[in-house]
Picture 1 (spheres, helix red, strand yellow):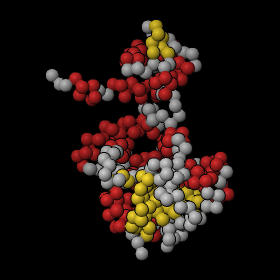
Picture 2: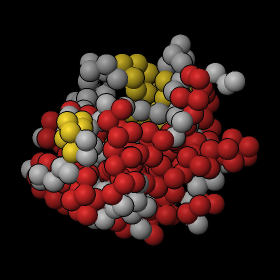
Picture 3: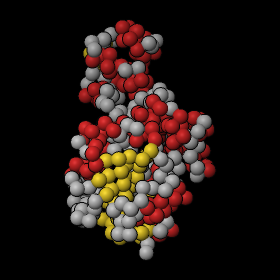
Picture 4: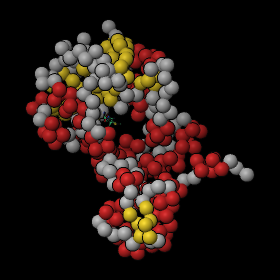
Length: 327
Ligand SMILES: C[S@@+](CC[C@H](N)C(=O)[O-])C[C@H]1O[C@@H](n2cnc3c(N)ncnc32)[C@H](O)[C@@H]1O
C-alpha cells in the first residue's frame, strides 16, 4: 500500500475545491446572507448536491463552517477567499485560472526543459496575456499593490541617491514601484517601460501618487532599445521570468542604454550564493524562467556587457545586485 502521506500530498481535491469555491463566489454569496445549500447553489449556478460535497470537503480542511447540515458560514480562511488579488480563481478569464491549469504541463516542461504552456493555451504566456486583455489586466493587478502590497522604494544597496536624476523601470508593470520611488525622491524623473497594454494602465497610478508631472511611459518591448541615458535602470521581478538567452538580451539593452556612470539594479531574481535558490516551479511552467545564484548571474551579466558593482542587502533587508556597464 502506498504511503498515506504521499497520497495526501498528491491529492488534488483540495486545491480544485478551492478554485471551484472562488470561481462560484461562494464566500461572497454567504457574506450577502445566502447560507443554505439550495439557495446557495441557485446563486452560484451550481448543482446543489455536488456543491454541497465540495463545501463539506472544504469544511473538513478548515475553510467555511457548516453550523447545521446544509447551512454554511464564513470563517477566517473562507473570508481570505474574497481578498483582492487572490490567485485562486479557476475560470480561464482569470490569471489564477490560467496558472492553475498550466500545472498540467509540468511533466512536459521537465522532460524538455522548455515551458509547455502553449500546448494548452495555444500561445506562450506573454503572448497569451496580450491576446486576452481581461487576463492581462488581472495579471497587472496581481503584480500591483492589490496583489503584492505597496512596493518598497528602497532600491539602492547603499541608499546613495545623490547622483540619481533619472530612473527607468524596465518591465515596471503599471508603475507602482516607480511611483513610490518618485514620491520618495522629488528631484528624480522616471520612465516606465512595459508592454503597451500594461503601461496604458499607469496614468492613474502616477496621478494617485502625485508624481504624474515627473513620470513618463514607453509602451514597448524591453528587447527593443530602451530610453537612453538614465542614471538608474531598475529590473524588479522580471529577470526570473526569462531563460538565459532572453535574460541576457534584456540586460544587454540596459547596458547599451545606461549613462556612462549609470547603474542597473536587479531586485528579486538573484540569490546570494550561500542560500538555497527557490525552485520557482511556476516560472518553469509558465515561462521557462528561473531564480539565479549570484555567481551564475555574474557570468550572465558579463556576457551582456555589465559587471556586478555591489551585491548585498538594503536597509529593509532585501538582497539586490547593482551593475555598471563594462567600460
Ligand atoms: C512579473 S511582472 C513584474 C512587474 C513589476 N516589475 C513588479 O515587480 O511588479 C513582469 C513584467 O514584465 C512585463 N513584460 C513581459 N514581457 C515584456 C516585454 N517583452 N517587454 C516589456 N515588458 C514585458 C510584463 O508586462 C510585466 O509587467
